[in-house]
Length: 500
Image 1 (cartoon, rainbow, N blue to C red):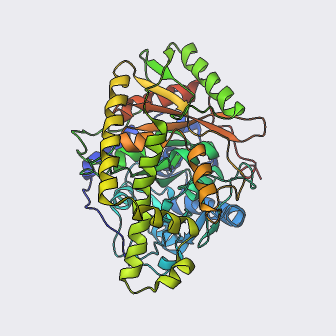
Image 2 (image 1 turned 45 degrees about the horizontal axis):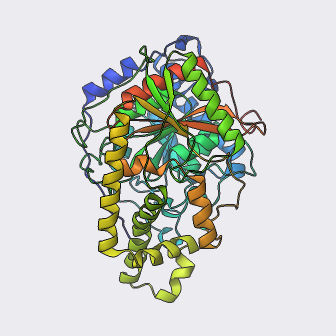
Image 3 (image 1 turned 90 degrees about the horizontal axis):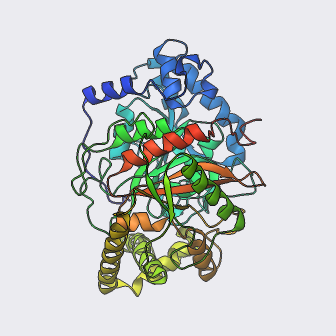
């Protein structure tokens, strides 16, 4: 049983060759001095391979050894593709900027011949017939896919604890969530299995786990990536990209995966390689749209980051656009629930008895499907109208600013179980929206936003900071990210599980 698929536009080999050349340098670092692949990011590993210091088999062996050591604890990889990856490494036929670098695909995206379960008990035997567009793009960029990563059911929640695939745990503290829905991707990177991993974001699902696991997570503009270039409607809230340890890995994966043109007049970003040199005007706020404040540790972290930006010469102004936060939350839930309703209807139309649904779909998914019954076409029209209004409001606000800085989440990573899909739906709804009070906006209005790992609390848990820019301004966000990475480096911060 299949969900909808998108058309693929493939990069030319000349563009990948240019990326390979551009990706060999990083401001402020001597890449040639990196000799240990376990300490290198993805581009660093690719350079070691291109210089002949390591083979693709050795890079894969590092990843496989690490997976053997920690995956039983974190449950990040749910569908191993180890044998296929070993065969590809042995053949050594890699090209592109990330040649031979081990990589993971989230279990919401198709890899031909491999199960795509959507973390749902109804799809555990669902074998993909072709690669998803972004999977084709990263393959062309040279990655060696070694498995599929854990995710919540259909990516419908901000934690990764599905009944089908099991609990995924945070390498910074195994009692805490790695976030979701790209929780397995983030846990695998934070645990040192791979330097970067494919992820997707429909309401914060790249930025949430990036914040929880101390990583870089860029939510791209609507229509930016391959297979998404025709997504121009406000109801198209999902994007696919990656989480990574370094900014430059995120930048090269963007360049590998973006469409030649797309969205509302988007042109390619290319590989962004250097920090910003200009003075930016940055709006700064910590209130959610509903007027609530984050936890004290998150608030203190964002204030420190705002000061860091000011110390770097940027103008930081406390300001935020004004719109009805409760109405926006209600509208987002109305749209969000459509996916669950569609899956339920697909199963029913496929002959699954209604009495069997509770054995195939999680309580949260069934709750969302029932919620959408009261939404319908008229409700979706109201969603479009409200999102369009909010989009205009934020666009007007952003005319005066280059970037808008907020928290990613209202708290540090929660404990396992707090947002599990079998919590009472009313409780889970409240906890979820209180937790993700900042991230859904960028999905609704289509703008890019990035989570950067600039803070940790006294318990040693990561706290991300989110920077949002105008539509199509990924280049600006990556340049600012490079600058902040240099000013307050995080490469030496390793999760306790990674140091074992």
